[in-house]
Length: 218
Ligand code: CDP
Image 1: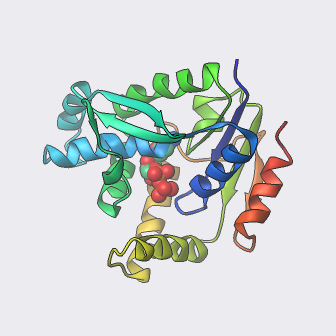
Image 2: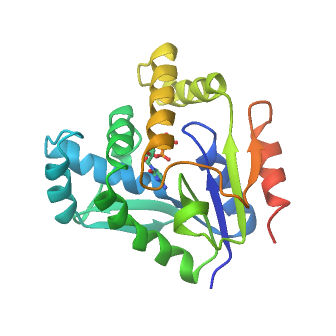
Image 3: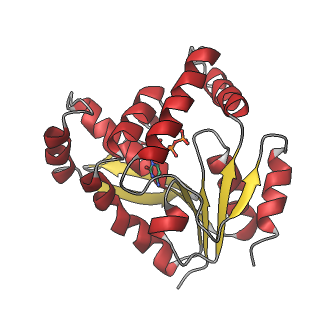
């Protein structure tokens, strides 16, 4: 059994940045489960499927083969044999991922993949339901959050740095919508596990958050 660290939280809380740094420091593998939902989202977008056409999403899930590989320590997502990692971070893929992650068949497709990655290696895995559903016996669980304003600003900076055009108010609205969607869905909603440590990163630097979580780990 590997040593498992679970980090859950809403969009833009800083999960991936923190998890990557923690993984590097501790020698764990960083498993980004959001990238897997985004991978399926790219598949739905490519097929012109709408998120509210649930039967079409379920059919498309059946012919999607998602594989996770690690190249130079970085997670790569393959969809039906093609590396689609560079397409995962668009707002369009994020919106489609959130809208389809409520469908049980979508979650089921990725659950075993996630559990298996954590079985034999030391991992820090981030997502929405890691501490509650995917790794209920994780050694350390963290619920990482921050105010909507701070999260929107971070997402805005991330997109701007990549040269994508964006608008802060639109991002804020998008984050609110995504929070609502992720927290109120029936299957595996975003919520803090009872035994998770709450970390509010609104007024913390990245380094402070990494230190706080590293102190909880072996
Ligand atoms: O980076 P960001 O927080 O915007 O999103 P992400 O972690 O890449 O996840 C994209 C979407 O996938 C989320 O809005 C969730 O709806 C869904 N997701 C999920 O349902 N369960 C997970 N374990 C991870 C992501």
